[in-house]
Length: 110
Length: 116
Image (cartoon, rainbow over all chains, first blue to last red; front, side, top):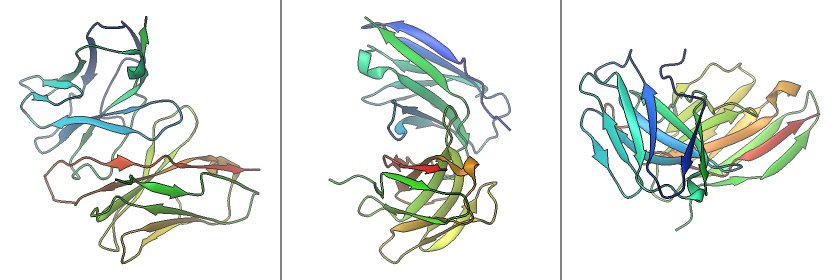
């Protein structure tokens, strides 16, 4: 059962912000929202996670709505190397038994 | 710092054979999880081990088994291989399994298994 819904693909111009949406309307109170990405032929790479509050790190920002039913991953200045499949995951097992859906294929174009 | 390492990188087997895949976690990480990624799909959770004990199991048949050693490295075993077992097998490590506490997993490059 998919717990998250993401658009299958998105394009973004190099240097612009990439905003990747995710719906998780059935999220429960103790579930975190995780974002991972997978560049072709590599293992997934952790980006960021959060519970209620917005989070920011050196890679991205995570905006979670007040009702926690959706979130947005923001890459502030996308580069060609950000081209990847981005996965939004909700998990309450300390992030160790992740259920990956189909993800969003982000294409950053020059 | 060495990341998560997996061996072998590629493997070709025939139907009915068995296979053992190996994973070494990042130094200091005690939790290891295994995932299967079929071409074109997201990774699917198989097992999680912590302190040599199985802490979680995904929806995979009993042909799949795993174990974790005292040095926290891990093996994934698959018996009676089927064509559908062809996939990228990913290992991920993390610091702990603290309940209700989010933590990040670090993935290895994977082992590409082809079953003919």
